[in-house]
Image (tube, rainbow, N blue to C red; front, side, top):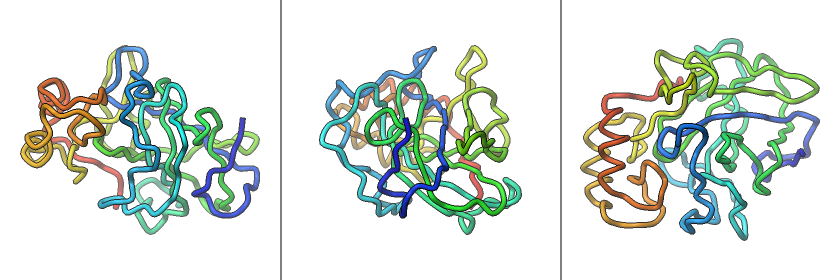
Length: 235
């Protein structure tokens, strides 16, 4: 199923985005634990603050089934991944990430559609509120108007060196632990975010495994293991 999202301005021109990515925090060995039934996911996209400053108005009346969290999708058009800086961004859109790694429309099932012309090659960036962002190391492949990319299949699928976490069994995902979203997993994520939120419940930046609670599990099993890692998406 295809559906144009509100954030891609204009009418769709037969171009679609089919992307798969995993987050380390909620990964359970096979897929990710969904957050839909926990009741803490916001009904409106959460990327309208720094550092993302995304002004899209995506919102829903209810969270669809099997949703893990909101993600912010960014398209970049250039000739090579090393040149895919912020100046090459052609579109951004908030979307839902499902427990199987699919990035979908607000209806919880449709892949994303966009109307922008591609001049060179298309690269995709995935932002998440407390995991390190990743960008495709290679141009997205296109077949019948659908641009596809699977970050989970290999560590080299993400631009940079060791830019994804080995989740086991040949599966890779975004590093968890960047609670203050400054693109680095360090002591500030603990002192600024986790220490102020530990013991609380809700939609929390320090809830690294996305179970609706901030506690020692987030600190010891996610943040501590990844301390020192930084994002490698070109700026």
